[in-house]
Structures are given as C-alpha cells and as structure tokens.
Length: 94
Image (cartoon, rainbow, N blue to C red; front, side, top):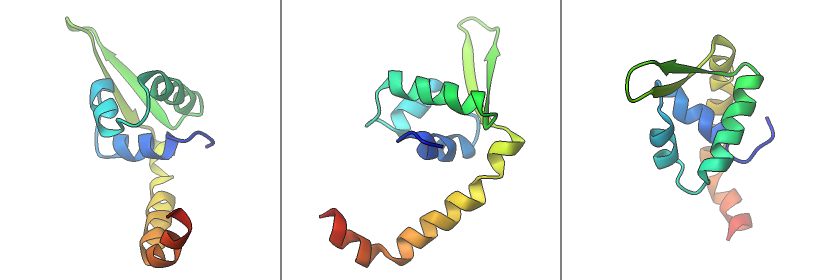
C-alpha cells in the first residue's frame, strides 16, 4: 500500500462509484498522472475494479472490490486514532 494517494483513493471510491474526473476533483493536490498510476496499482492488487460503459461518450467508473472493502475498517481506525491524538500530532507538523 505504498503510494501517497492510495488511501485517499480508496476512501474516495468507498463512498460509491467514482469517475476519474470526480476523483481528480476530490484529490486536487495530486496530478492526474499520479492518480492514474496509483489507480492501476490498486487494480493490480485487486482492491478496486474499473468498469467501462460502452455508451458514447465512454464512461469509466471505479469501485472497491470485496477485498478493497476489507481495508475500510483499518482506515476508519487509523482516522479515529488521528482525531483522538490531533493535539499531540499537530506539534510535529507545524
């Protein structure tokens, strides 16, 4: 799970099917190229799936796989830990 944006990508997609433009808007700090690369890696690891609808224009959507859903509790726990210790952690980021 190395990659600066992978947890953010998983969390973004967790909220429902996401199109590439929606993901880019949700994570504007990351370049589209980096996001695309990390999305490919997450697909290769079986955490997300990509669906291409054959309508015109083509519509691409990403969703979490069953395996990808299993990481959500760990992300929630880590986020809660961060909130619980925000005061102490902020000393190190300023």
